[in-house]
Length: 76
Image (cartoon, rainbow, N blue to C red; front, side, top):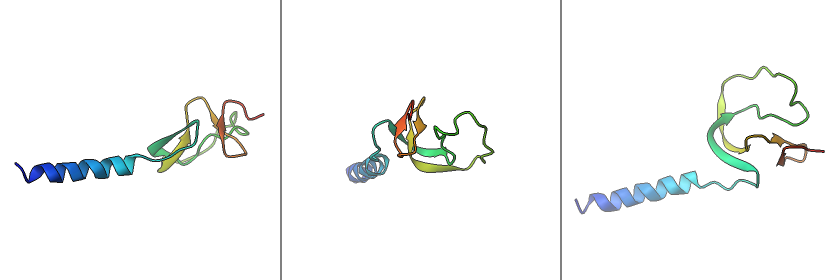
């Protein structure tokens, strides 16, 4: 039992290190987000995007990726 505690502690540290990713304000980290992030300029158009996913920082719900690469509900 004493041998398993250090192994579990190491695993927990590795999970915390991998999952703590710095994103800018208005963004959240996702392991499997859409490769086709919704842009403010094309928010009213439908895009033909496949279901592939990628990990990274994505705009929070209700916001769009603006031309300055920031997330906002209005990019005017």
